[in-house]
Image 1 (cartoon, rainbow, N blue to C red):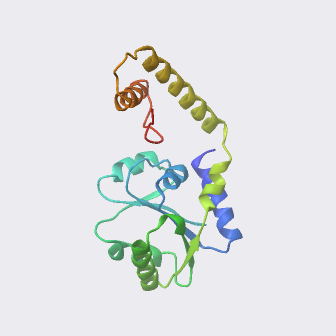
Image 2: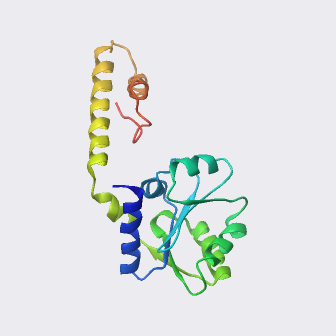
Length: 192
């Protein structure tokens, strides 16, 4: 599924729950919706706009990875940039946020910024995750490739084991071998 198809699906979901926009903060959801792999950023998605908000470290990367998005470079605390971006939506708009992924402190900052912008902030759960449940052909292919790579790395490391090697060393060998074979990262800390 392309990013534009994912945006269309999310926009349909927003209309169903009577939201004008969604502020996406969860990293996996941000990547799924935009293709952006940077470690810092937000997405603001409405029926009319798709904005990727990030700092100077990632603007070039965001522009390259997320051509369906308007990339906005920000600096400073959330309260200095978010109200202006939200004001672009217009007063009286309902903007959702990923309540399962926002800390209490961040919620306080979000609420203050939304108040300054005349926007109603609404907690949401699972809007993007519901889209992520269904895998398209490319996602299924990626999953199969990851399984194959993991199996190959495991087989290679098991073949090289000798008595006295620590569990920690075996876990590191598996991770290193996976990365050498093309893995982007590990999904979770390995346990041996």
